[in-house]
Image 1 (cartoon, helix red, strand yellow):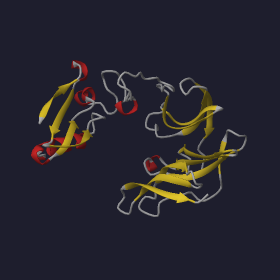
Image 2: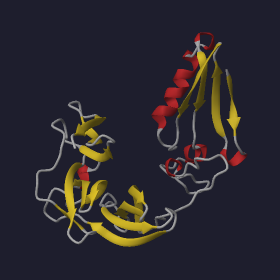
Image 3: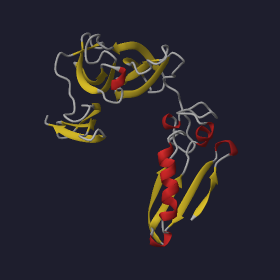
Image 4: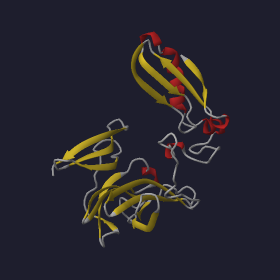
Length: 264
């Protein structure tokens, strides 16, 4: 076992590496992407003395606090070192660079993009949270943007907004595009701020090829607990049909990632 700090002084990372007595795969355990999320950090501390390298085949790499500046600065999401959210800015390539394609601001936050690309170009539906009213940052709409290269985007504004007095009056977030001709999407919605994390899924259809209107049909929800069924992703299958992935509530209130297949 070896423990120590890697990286530069201002961004050092505490790491432990266990090399087993036999060859095998490498398992990486990473905690502390967000400096305030303490349970994974404590879990690795408790796990470390229980690992026995003589019984291990392969290697275990423990990253105890990936975002140490955030941990030491007691910030929630953003590192005080560079003002970035580590979960959103992994470089991907060792010598790669990061490109901000849709910057947030003091007025709006952007997240959860759905991106399609083909020979005609790039299309993005992205969730937008207004930040101008304290305590109401959970509100959400969906905007649309296009690009020729996936890096520089032209913003076309809001294409799906909440419908007052209905199940989605607090927010509407596109999660999957079922078809573009005509444009039909699945989207998350909620009626109250208290329903944040417990959204259900509806269907919306474009009226003019771009702007979406919710269809008047029952929403898709889990039969259990709070009824949450959200973040649906649709994957077309080579032989026809679609595989759906979604987060759904269990009877005990926890959520599972689930999947189902719809025939073509």
